[in-house]
Image 1: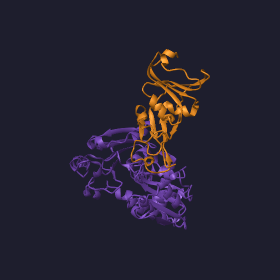
Image 2: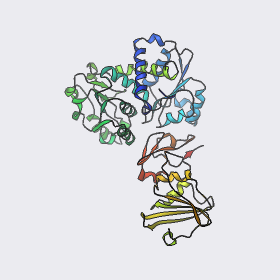
Image 3: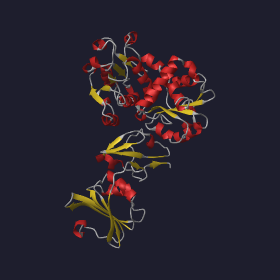
Image 4: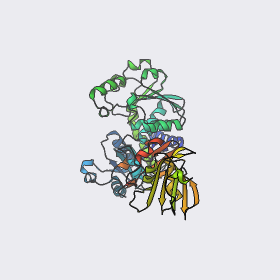
Length: 304
Length: 161
C-alpha cells in the first residue's frame, strides 16, 4: 500500500505502482466515477521554484476530483522571502489543506517537510533528487505503449541532475526491464542511484553513444541537458549536440520505439519527430492528470 | 596491553578506547563530542605499535564511562576498536564497537544542496551501508574512507534545534 506520503520512487513497490496505474486507467476511461469525490477538500500547492506542467496538472487533477487548490504564490511574495524555514511554512499550510504538493530546490526537502505534517504530502521535485509523481505518469505511458515487463528502456541526457531519471530508474527495478543509460561522462548517474540499481539486481548498462544501443530499445526517454550545469557555453554546445535526436538519428531504431520526454524540451528532440508515431511526450504530459487524480484519490482515502 | 605499548599512564576511572584505526584518534574525540570544554582529562596515543594490527591509536578518557550506544558510532571510523571501562585501575568491562544501522547528529552531509545544510530544525541522519553511509534526506553516499572528513566539527550535526 502507498504510505501516507509520496516522497521517493524508491519507496514504491510493484503493487503500489500497479494499483495507481490501474486506478488511473479507470479514471481515464470514465472520469465521471470520481467526479466530486473530494468535494470540499483542499490541496495546497507549495512550489518554491517555478513549474508549469506539474503544478497545473495537480491543480487540474484536484479540481476534476471536485476539490479545490490553494497556492502559496511565488517565493518572492511569500514569507519564505522573510527567512521562514521550510519546516515552519509547511506546518502553517498544513492547517489550511487536506493534502500538500511540494516542489523545492533542495534535495531531501520533501522528506523533511513530511516529518512536520500529518496531511499527505507529495514530492513534486526536490532539487536533483526525486520526482515520483512524474515517474508514475511515465510508467503509465510506458505501460500503454510498450508494456512494463520484458522491455528495454534507454534513458538519455542529464542523468546526474535529472530527478525524473532518478525516480524512473528506481521504479523500473520493480519490473523486468533492461535499463540503458546514455550520457556524457560528466553527467552519469549519481553514485547513490547506481548503488540502488546494483542492490536491486537491475539489468543496467551505461553508454556515451546512443547508436550503440538504439536498435535494441523499446522506449527512449530523453531529458534536457541543462545549460547552467556547464561552466562554459562551448562545452555545453559540444555535449548537447551529441544527445539531440531527429528522424535521421532514429533511422536505426525499431518502428514501434516509444520516444518520451518529461518536458520542457529545448532542442534535444527535433520538431520533425513530433509528427511520427514514435513521439509520445505530449501524450505523456496529458497522462499527468488521470495519474495524479488516481494518486490524490488514494492519498485522500477515496480509493484503497 | 602493557605500559610500554601504551606510552601513556594508566587511568584510575574512565574509558580506554583501544585498537582505534591509526590516525583516527582525534576523529574519535570529535565523534564523542570531547573537545576539552567538559573538563575531562584525555590521553591520546597515536601510531602506537601493536602486535595485532601493526599500528593503532589509543584514547583514554579519565572520569567518564562511555555508554555502549555512545561508542557504537565509532564503528564508522574505528571498526576494530575495543572499549574498556576502568574502575580503580582495573578493567571491569570490555566491549567491541558494534555496527549501527543509523547515525544521527554526528556527520555533516557533503551535498551543499541537501536540506540538512539549510537553516532548518533537522538533525542529520545517515543510514550505515556495508562500505559507507548514506544521507537519509538526499541519499548522498559517503564512502567508508571519507567518513572522518564529514564529522561535524561542532559535534552536533544539527541546525537550529
